[in-house]
Length: 536
Image 1 (cartoon, rainbow, N blue to C red):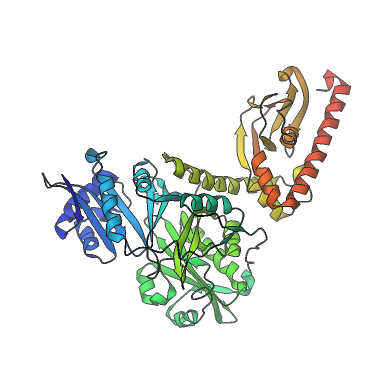
Image 2 (spheres, one colour):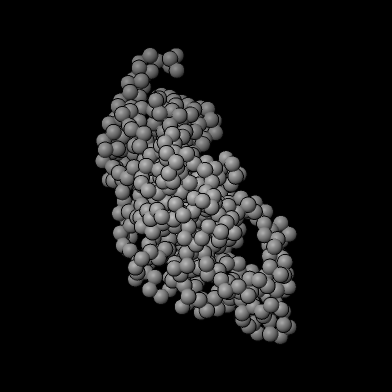
């Protein structure tokens, strides 16, 4: 018989053995193999630590925790932490028992509970979903274990959390697919308003002097209300009003901006040197002018000077300008958490945005169906981040972008995917169903009727393939074969239609430029046919 109970000081040694069996000797936090560290967690008011005991043998087979203090004190937000079951005792329902007991014990203490589910196996994800948690995010390469391991983020709501939720968040278009998926998973109406026109905060680096905050700057920053008390655009588990020295003990740091010697703003971040991870948790400013400089400088310091590999920001779902600013600094929307933060008399949605400073390398990933749907949206955001610079490199030669502004190029790139084809491979065949347009970023493609025997033209860097079929909905009329290694951005019919509905200005330019490009290719094909086979 298995009994789940609260851990006592005498359990500490056995709990470390469970951790070692589950995480191995290369675990990034070997302090959890220290019984004294575990004992402190057992007696902490901020942590609930449970164990699963075999009443017959007295052996501890599993353990699980809840951390109450991941949000600000008033947020009532907690994390369901490490759930570890001895390998030989798995598949016996112990994980589910630990989860059920955790939920029963924290119901009155938390509005929002979060779980970081490991993705090397789907066990924790399945347990989370079976106990009412909903998939709301995918945080790639968040944990540093044997390698940087990704996690699937799940949320569960209790008490009045969702009844207190502030409706109609305003998000930039790049966040909308993730917000829609997360809200649906949580059983909520998709009430998000898409803000197409919100600009980013402009950087004025030459107007401000930035430095690390010392004790004498604390009182000056504390008097600034914007971003600290009102108009909060960034959320975090610690805030300036906790006290300067308490912030220091949490390995927190503030960069302050001065103009003409006066402090006009500050940005706070924490660094986990073990995980090589950081979190920007607060931004305070007298006006809009300094915000772009503070955020960009914090990102630069963390990336260039501190060697951080993973940067995370919880940004308000009602602050599209901040969302746009972070996106332009190569942050990607990775999670959308309804009602995450308690502010004044309501709960606010938050978007977790992630910046990776190392190449994306996921390693083994095993996800449940709902978690996979969220991960696909997040990873498409990372694809867009890679595509936009590649498209920008060839913008002057890409006819589809004639008369596009930089903002319009970025919007189109955000709905494209990047694909590579080896020399000699078939991109598509004649009479096959059509669903995508291909923009050749690099390489050369031959277009023919009935295989290579009837070559009708060549598509080169900066030109498109499949536009006729995309525009008409017909099957492909020709076959396309990579004559060299080819890199192409692909745009699906559904994504194009959705973009045009939201941005008619982009639609007008796309259809005009596609028509012009198609006409040029037809004229070139006619000239080739008239000249005869020797011209090929």
